[in-house]
Length: 249
Ligand code: SAH
Image 1 (tube, rainbow, N blue to C red):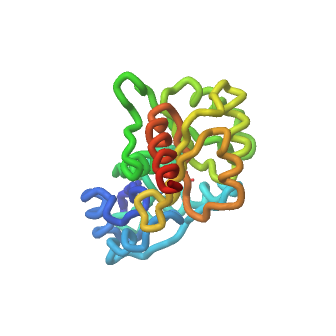
Image 2: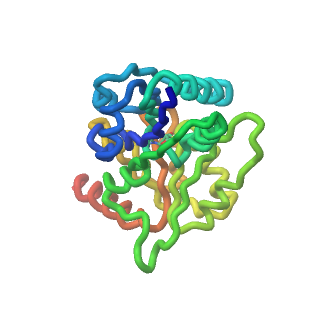
Image 3: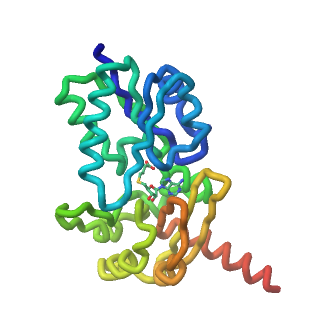
């Protein structure tokens, strides 16, 4: 049998933020390989499928990735519909390129179903647009995380050059992130919004400034975290401060 492999975006967390197309593919799936961040209710859409967790841990990416590639190829030999279910959108910090390449080299048909990426879910949650006329015309999505052996990348310079920045996979590295951004010329007074568990019941939003980020982030965060920064968050920050002052009387 020559099955088809679907790389499906599960969305940011909430189970009803998957696309109709993604849900339909899951219903037809014979086997699903899913990431650690995928919601149990999303997985439950795959009523007839064998479900296999392939969540990766930091720092052990490359071996695990080769193994996942091989399992996808093998699965296509025995299942008509194979799903690789990924958090958010598969095409953003999702290693889709490696899987796509391995599948194409093996002559397997692939289709990609987009999903709502975390930055968009977090923006919806905080109700602050990533862009704003006259204030923010450019947005950059970065991750400071690099795998062993990967060349250095100037992610901090990319944030400094954009109006609004969104940092993926930055939890636990707040000190390094702050240091790198300030060295790249981002002022310590830049407004920051930290959103944890966007779209989920455990969602938490914190408004602060870049200079305060290391102190805030130390020793917390069990869920996935996005760090968002730029002038668009300034008003929100001011409003929160005013609210806090009012609450203090
Ligand atoms: N492909 C995914 C990103 C995978 S990288 C996407 O498009 O969203 C994993 C990182 O995404 C996490 O470290 C965190 O920075 C971010 N993330 C994923 N889900 C999130 C959520 N619900 N809330 C906040 N950040 C999230």
